[in-house]
Length: 247
Image (cartoon, rainbow, N blue to C red; front, side, top):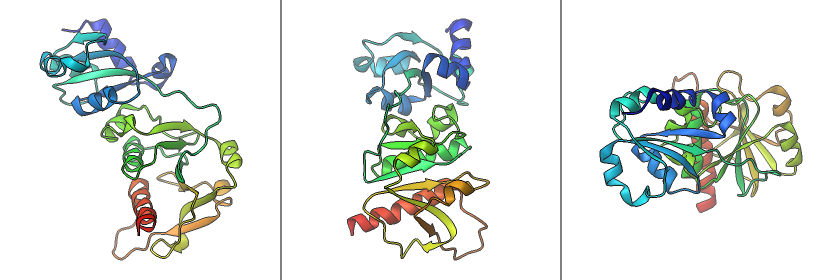
């Protein structure tokens, strides 16, 4: 059984101010924890059931380990059921002069929903992107719901805080954004280097940023759905880009 002190500490890390104060974040569930172990991230502490500890004894030898019951993990975490573990990892270091490290990059403008953020991180990982750039006002990358929604891809995609000054510094790169008046995505020819700008769920790309876009693309509608959420739209655009690359 975990002490109430440990459970309270883990629960406090559900809040951004406490995560940031210690530069750590929580990962829940077997898949996420194992992905974290296999990454370059540093694990500060592991809270796990006896069965998890026995199954993964070969990779936890040097960790600060606390045995916990499934009930402890439920009390400390956000999952309805967790028969495996909760790990506390150190946050990624913010690069001093962040630059896109691949030909394509994603910049999120005030995306608020943790599920959307997590899904976009997962998409970035799927299509081979190693970073995701986040504007001020975006939901925290380390939000437990966002981390869970990445399905382990938090361990492969580095979050980078980026503001308007960052975009200005990278202005030589093409800025592409989704817009109903844009070029049909099925006919658009992607440049060799670009930053894909995706806006908030309710307002899209802010007006000031929209004026700086070099290209606008539109995902054509064939049915009656009112809209696509930002994660779905991001996936469609990335897939069209990748198909052109591999054609």
